[in-house]
Length: 103
Image (cartoon, rainbow, N blue to C red; front, side, top):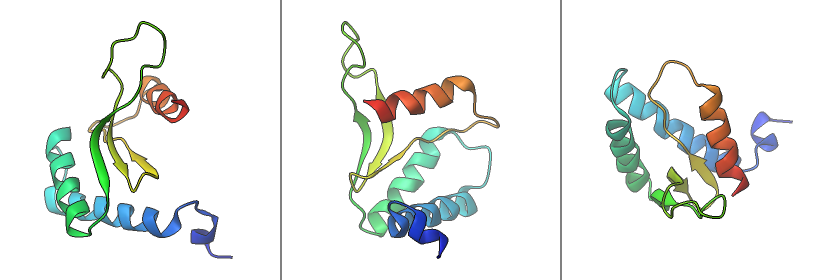
């Protein structure tokens, strides 16, 4: 069994991963999040993938302000892409991703 058969959206995942490698090869390291997101968006358009950038999610609890929860990209209504430009991911990053997936 190939590894791609174990992925939920194997073909789309490989396309997105390829885009991320192209962006890294083009921009290198030490750019800010907006620069990486702009380049990712350029390739998503080039490969004609449907996406939403900075999609606003509903509040996660009563009283939370609208628009507080955003994801960098929602690709083909299937893959959430959250871009980080730091050396190590933190517990806060982990819990942010988890909260997003539970909304």
